[in-house]
Amino acid sequence: MGKMSHGSRAKTRYKMRKKLGESGPIPVNRLVKVFEVGDRVAIDIEPSYHNGMPFKRFQGKTGIIEEMRGSAYIVKLNDQNKEKLVISHPVHLKKA
Image (cartoon, rainbow, N blue to C red):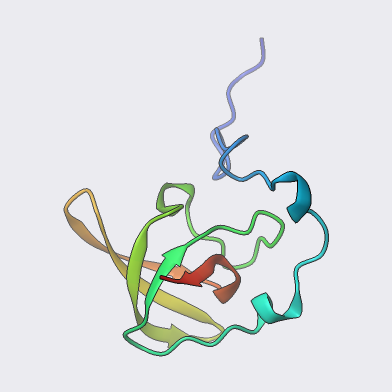
C-alpha cells in the first residue's frame, strides 16, 4: 500500500463530491453573490472552485459575516467552543 495523503483535501471523497445533477459549470449568480456585514451564512464548499476554499472541517457550519477582505468574506463561527475566523470566497457561502 502507498503512503497516506496529508493534503488539505485528504479524506474528503464523499464530503466534497457533487451529486449527480449538480455537475457542470457554476452559474454566474453563485460567483457574484453579495453579503452584508452581520448576515448569517452557512459554509457549503463548492468542490469545483478552489479559490478561497475554507478548510474541510468547516463544511456545514454556520457563522456571521464579520467583514469583506478583497473579494472574500471573513466568517466568525464557533468550532469546539472556540471562536474562529474563516476566510471564504462567496461561492462557498449560502444565506442561512
